[in-house]
Amino acid sequence: MGNQMDRLSHLSYAEVPTVDPNGVDAEDGPRIGVSYIFSNDDDELEDGCAVDGSDKDPNQEEKQYDQRDEVECAVYNRDECIYEKSAKSVNLEVYSPENLLNKCKPGDLVEFVATGQYPHWAVYVGDFQVVHLHRAEVKNSFLTDASQGRRCRIVNELYKFKALGPDMVVQNAMEQVGLKDRELSWRNSECFAAWCRFGKREFKMGGEIRIGKQPYRLKILMTGKQPHVLEFQSLEDMIMEKRRNDHLGRTAVLRELAAHYSRMEEIKSEPGAE
Image (cartoon, rainbow, N blue to C red; front, side, top):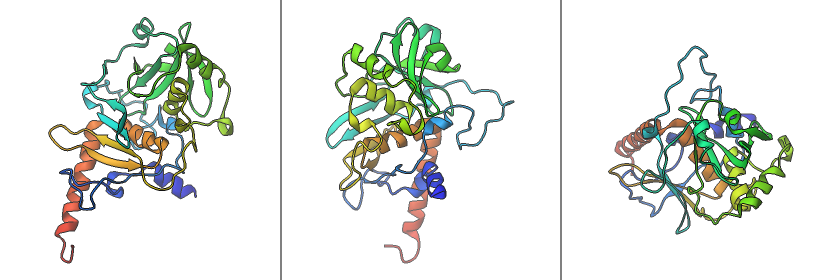
């Protein structure tokens, strides 16, 4: 089981069935994406790790965060768009923690970002503080401490679900403070923060049964090309893959996809290939 968990945490597109690069699939539709049912909490890799999960060199200079390396994507539940991140749809500008405090209101979702790290999400609860899931514990921290030097932004508009009232969002977050390890119902900080704001069980571990057709489609937006599409059986699985892409960055994801498409073309051209 341990090897299986590790493998599912570090899959590449070369190992995932996907659609044709031109947007046309011989089997009439997107292929099945990855199931992360056995994977570890990706927040364990939020800081102190390189993109491949290995320890960072402490002497290596930190790269400046570059918004141009954002992976733009959209998520659909059947035909309904439930999430969209693109420069055309929302403001993706990032700020220093000190400057963001002037913009935050209780109940806001905050995303901390840094090159080569998983994004970290938190709920702003007022008085310069956030509640967030970090390293298998729900904590109440000052926003500046939770940032750990990362840039940040308010991300209320990424998910398209109807939000709860600010007081309820704050209450949801504060009531979970102190939960840890086996008491937790969320696999990562994004699932926790989004659950606090929207109250949907789909953000919780096991909130959906992974059987039957895959209702969630993750579309990776590619300039000048058809979107690359993966399907998932649960919102939780889709979020894990989306966060993996955020971790890698746009340049690495596009390189990975190009290598996958190239390999698929090689397979098609091999003798005996149908």
